[in-house]
Image 1: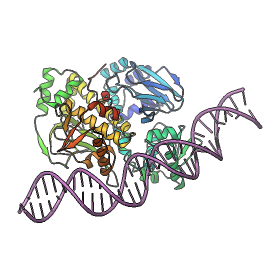
Image 2: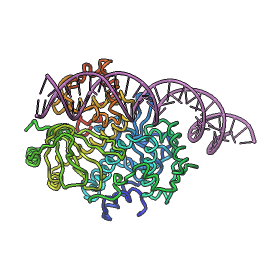
Image 3: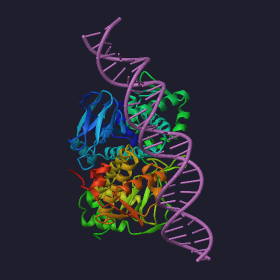
Image 4: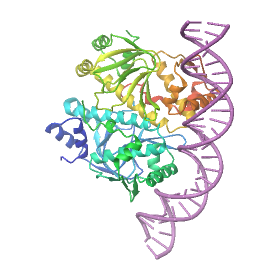
Length: 238
Length: 238
DNA sequence: GGCCTCGTTTAACATTTGATAAGATACGTC
DNA sequence: GACGTATCTTATCAAATGTTAAACGAGGCC
């Protein structure tokens, strides 16, 4: 139980009591699988909250011209639609980029837990504020040219995956397509490839066999102007 | 007291009791003025929460090349840095685009009120989730070409200003420069002007004397693919 | 009125990025 | 191993956007 990525992540907001931890473990018991490219959830469509426990997913919207814009990645341990009851935007979806495992929680039950347990309340606040901080950083990132933007996104993925034990010192598995990555960067797939070649040529990264290797993390961070405090991994409070 | 834009906006999340309203009115009593271009606040720098009561402001970050990216506008009645204690990103700032009036609140006092009053707690949750929804919509907007992006931003400003009584049926005052607007769109000032001329030529807007007029709101919304549910003005809950 | 500053507008050119298409490579299925 | 599909890669051309600079206009100040 100390290895559940969800609880592990929540405890970044501050320690949970044993009781709180047990309540949450009971809540997230069930699992279902979702195929790659299938939706995990659509906003405003249910009384469920979704916990992704395995695989890569994303929050996205589709524009009228058919373009998809990914607004955030969803990694193991991330909650989706915690607060959504239809009032916070109607067309946001969560889709699986790879095969995923998901736990569906009853929103009402989670709300009860938030009301009863201060540690859980604090943790859910932390999760929400972290999402807000990350969303704003993505807006900032969109002001950078595509090469920096790609570098920044790779740095973010690297740090987030490292925290949940899915990256080692210099590499991480990235089983998504360049098209997916382009939708996350707001850039065409062809241009992702172009910029990727440039980063490769400079020796900043390699990406083969669905694994990204960053020989010199500091160099990539420097190119990306990556400043990880927005990921809030230093916990709640000063 | 029914005309305070802050309380008015908070009550979108659900009615406040008389007691709650009085507590908040006491809290937001003081006022200071901030000159255009000055910062109202820097993240992580104080134990204060800032309520903008007049003027146009923005949240922004500055990139290493000197470019500024505005990640959201801050209008009268908007709170800033409610949760910020240094853990949620270090370099976000709030700056005045025009002369502003600001009330500085003690964060500890606001936290007390949230803990004691369920209506206030719900309202602060609503404010936060609304910010998240809006930030994600800005990410989506960045995937649109500049003309749509400008149209979308004008639609957003129009609706938000209308709600606080600062816009009439077809126009609103917009006392900011095209450079500011460019920083919000992630586009150069020259290109803002280009796209602006195009919108003018199509008769979609006029913008003179710091006032934007939208003769046919529906047409502009259609161009922008503007779907206002993300602004959460329909309140909390389904 | 004259001057100064700031913002807007327009122009010319450079760069980035998008769109399309074709060839190459990997992977799964039979 | 052969085939089919998806992805990656590269090339070419078109469109969007950035950069720089200059002219123009409005408003404040003396």
